[in-house]
Image 1: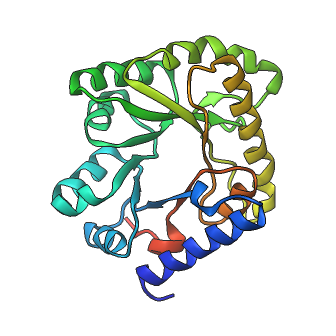
Image 2 (image 1 turned 30 degrees about the vertical axis):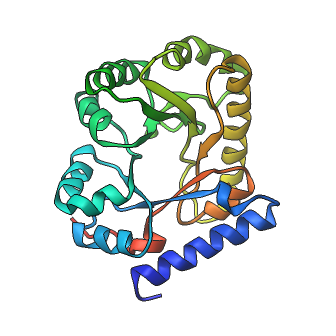
Image 3 (image 1 turned 120 degrees about the horizontal axis):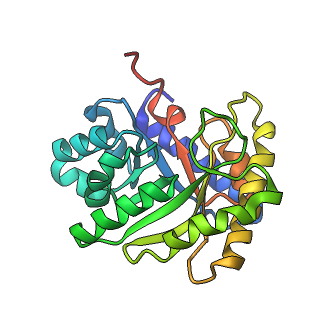
Length: 239
């Protein structure tokens, strides 16, 4: 497992195995390779090894990599998976294929205007905070009894003509035991079903959850996107 290609193949095999054990079609689970803070040379290796979805946490860093990679960047879809500052909305709307981390109505309004100006429709996932941790971004969704309070915030988003809501994303609390993440993955699925009932005009089929340490549990609980970095790219460079 000393090459990016070997690690990518191994993770892809694990995704397929986890899906089959859960009675799911492996093709229903897509891998986003997370390359934040890694040099563009490594991103080029990831793409050359066969990855088709690249995830970045910082809008400008990802855009610069796209510019440097040129035609190679066009071979993949670029996913913004980190927190987006409102002032970066135009960059994301114009240069990313997917946003996993739409976390406020304010950001949604900025993205709607930016996508309209760019003449694009941006697929988005709503990021949900299911743990109540202050360090986590996202719609406050850790109390099921208060999910109804989310509806007025989400309604304008699903009606935005240039944002295409596809589902939800979450990050559970950090733990070394993947099983401790399971309740959060399960809760996200339940929240997705709740929102789908209230906003049937949108497509809520996607769940972005699971990273290097817990993606197999996430797949068991219905993940359709898993965001894997370290298991493929190795440790991030120290700053």
